[in-house]
Image (cartoon, rainbow, N blue to C red; front, side, top):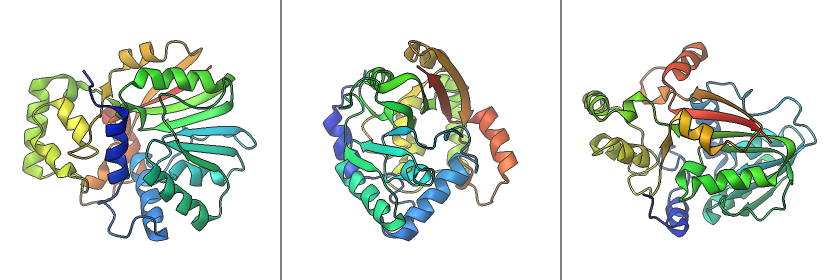
Length: 272
């Protein structure tokens, strides 16, 4: 049972904005944003944002739920949309505002709680939320809020941690963790190295974003379908195989194959 409050979540992300500790340049500098974008685009999405940015998005209203330091703001800023980004962390919002100044893009950025969006019903044509609402106490409430503020016929694309067969089986998880320890496979920053000494799969998922991260949940496809059941259409896929943990650069085609087979995340494309 999740017992941590939204304030605990806020404090963690204020102290640990996404990718801090992994990039060896000052957070908020252009070099940091460029490095951030390179990791997101090339490692997490294997260089292909087609599933995340609709081709007909120009001129539409877009809400970015959990905008972080502004990755989607920078991507949508190139496409002349009416963009709004919210994040639970005021510190992270300030980073996103620095990005807005550096790259000269337009858009509204504000601190906000995905469980209680301040916007009116039927406000947005498109909503994106990638790797966010699995970090909040009431993920189901976030889904309800996304449905509420989305216009009829509007679309949303969401990313959540996937509880694959490794995370679902304690025995398989222990074997996988054993080999990860031998290979010393981990990510830098925010104490993520401690994932390798996690007691169980739930702790491993939580610690993926930092050893002090209060909440990190994974979901099966069945659970996702139930959670998004009120949407008129739903399509699921898998993405993100973290090749950056290895000392070699993988071609995009291999990244996509591995992501489809062993992806750590579920992409959820829905329509209201």
